[in-house]
Image 1 (cartoon, rainbow, N blue to C red):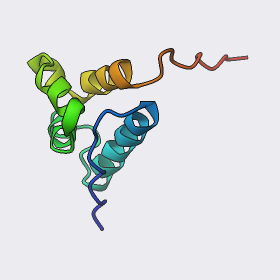
Image 2: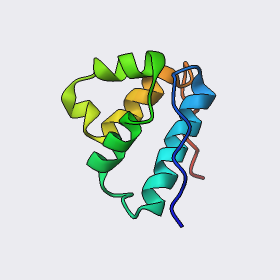
Image 3: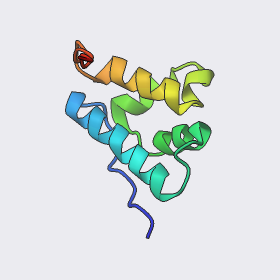
Length: 90
């Protein structure tokens, strides 16, 4: 069974950004595309509107077309002002 499309991403807040990223990952997994970063980036672009769409349109093409780069750009722009500290390895 195919995963439903994630809700439209508008760029409202950090929680929405994190939920969107997870939803894109789940959709890619369901479609067996989790290692196809071009597909994931293109799919994510179809789910953006409002300020997120305008922001995405202004990104460099290499970021628009690579999920690894786009995911980081999403978190940098819409995520927490300071990322969580890395887990310590004891």
